[in-house]
Image 1 (tube, rainbow, N blue to C red):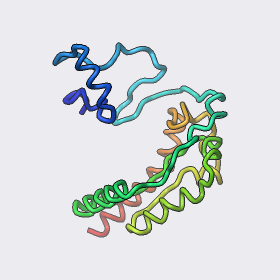
Image 2 (cartoon, rainbow, N blue to C red):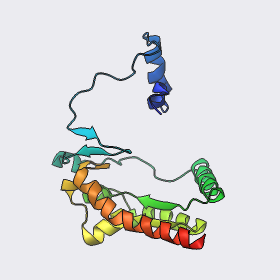
Image 3 (cartoon, helix red, strand yellow):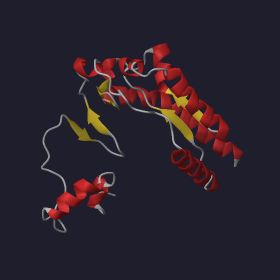
Image 4 (cartoon, rainbow, N blue to C red):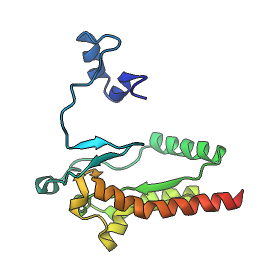
Length: 180
């Protein structure tokens, strides 16, 4: 999509796009700076391959300080519209909370209440929900070495996530096929 619409990258920050255009960006020019070796490469279908491991210093800072995790009514309305659109098109939805490093989750004042909100939302719409942070708390599937930063898994973490998520998706597909 970014190839067709290079400004898509700046959809959440119109000021940056405005400054790029004002600075003389022309059709065919790139909005992106020259690529540097970041230690990871694009695989396919949204996957970036990385062996990078999060540095301990990033686990010792509270990334959530001052943030509010409550959904406002607009977000809830759009969530409902997405579920409705999926149902109209016979698409079964699986709500997933992806894993974060355990120390980062500990910074949240009450993660269980946060997870319960998603669980209740999923139940209200009759959709399945998997919270990998709760699973990680019990089974330690995702040690620190499986994260490249506080919000992204590296290759080993993604492979572990896939190993647990793919069977759930296969079951959903089999149930959908049996129902039709």
